[in-house]
Length: 108
Length: 116
Image 1 (cartoon, chains in turn cyan, brown):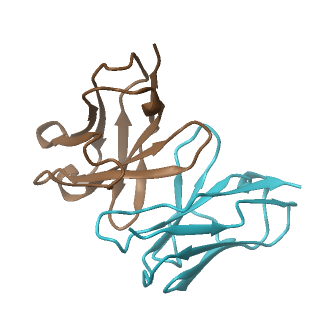
Image 2: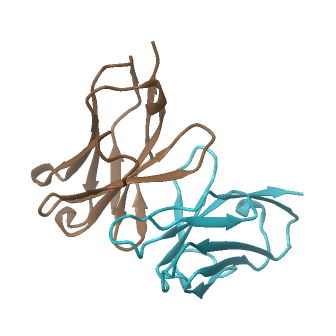
């Protein structure tokens, strides 16, 4: 199985900050990496797919980069509605799309 | 509008069986995989398995193989997740989502509570 490890597990930041979340795969997954945002009591929402493609309707302050084993999600200027938990997911392993453990982004 | 509508919350006793559903609309249900994801209280997302309703090809995460059954009825655009004998540890929120290399459409989730 491909293991996905996110860091940090939690993060405190202020509105307007630039924030970066990292995801590392246990083996190379090319660019088969997705990012999701989940708010309390809600279903996850797709933000980024294929490592760097922005899902339709997602604000441009969200961006993704990386390939191989190391990936990042960047929020260029935090907005109040961005405080949530973020998950990475690999889709390289055929139909076994494992998730990272999540990064909780909290207000400082 | 593309959407997945999941069945309502369930409260069951240990040992009981259960089948929850996920109905797709607004797109060709037989042309996309449907994945199932578990979220235990206060925990992260866990990939359970996936089904292609077009031919019912199904794959399971090793962690869930033998613990649940995923199925689909393409005639009514509905996927299912079922248990034959629930345990307290099955208490969780269960999400279905359309999968095409990424999960772009999600149901709102079905809460399953297993308690004696």
